[in-house]
Length: 257
Length: 308
Image (tube, rainbow over the protein chains, first blue to last red):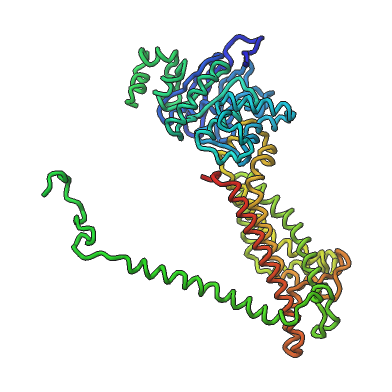
């Protein structure tokens, strides 16, 4: 549905030497990693390893936290998103984000899905088409098509999270960032989200932060393992799980750290 | 003993009606006593309010009629007439005051919650608290010196309105600050993460969540302000006609309660007008409070589940 940029055939997102400093410590230390099209990459690691910080630097959400300093480059289709000429608002409109807890707004289901389009002043016709498409892609359409005017807060947690995915998808981003999107959900809701993500990775770059190795094993194509702010190793999922090169990786995937 | 319970000896006995020393444990008498005591205390608490309403209504209702609302007081307190001028005056003063308090309080609260760093926000909050704690007669005196004499407005609608507006500002400030501060941070992150500019976050996400609470605060501030006497006592005068303009004197209901009782000490017929004014004020205050409850209930329904 959404092809990668015709004029660009490098990785969609390319991270180089990314360091994030807080006052006392380095949250990320020289992380270099590429994200190619049509791939679901799981960013895994123990609590506090910097995986949430990492995904938040990819669309400049780190700027909401005072006192963080970002060095290095994050390239989106070759352009450094930290360049002075780049407005972070535009970056965030190109790379959708889904959070740990469902974050629906107190509006109707329809208005939630249309939120990003209203921000860019899309026409009603554009919104009509894009909202329907986004709800279908997020796998929520069949459940809500009859009552799109219902308050979004009346949906179940899993449905709310898929609505958040739809909200992110409605502006047709090439990249979807998810920060532990299923950790607040029950197994059935988790399974539906995983199915949705597996469909989505055929169209766009999906970057999934998770502490759950089993989830990474189930749905990711590649795994990147972070520990203490450093990228320990990354590679195809099967390889990472069966033949990790680093001892730390082996310890993590077997549940010892 | 039974082998199935081969755990270390528990701290309590196995008998659930006794404590560890073997005394019978009965706490239910306390529970029962409280069930009776609390409603009783509640009655004690609301009794003064009911008493107040009763006496005000008893004093006002015999002489209250539609004419009270539509005729001006006769010149000379105690010689009859209605409360048209003070009613219109009170509403006009409250309108000016609410405008002033909204401009200062709402914008101040919004800026404090959304844009100031923690340090500056703290300073502004402390200032607002000091303002709220200032005795209202001091504020009245300030209004008299600043607006009536220094600016030369004289005792007027403007002077009383602005002074009362300053009195109401901290209430609205607090409501706005609290309302915008309590928008959950994950909602803010989601809006920014979806590419909302700060102003879009404010208008499309934060305000629909915060405004009902702000509005409740505004109506509460109005309910408090409409009955305040001190800020307007020195800044306007009781006249028998509705205000002719912003810089003309405006009468007000609290002034008629004040002067009605004062005159009533020597001229009993004046007290009726004071009771009527008090009754009207009560009706306005209760009405504003009902409005606040309605707004809050509506907002609660709409925002259910948001603050979990």
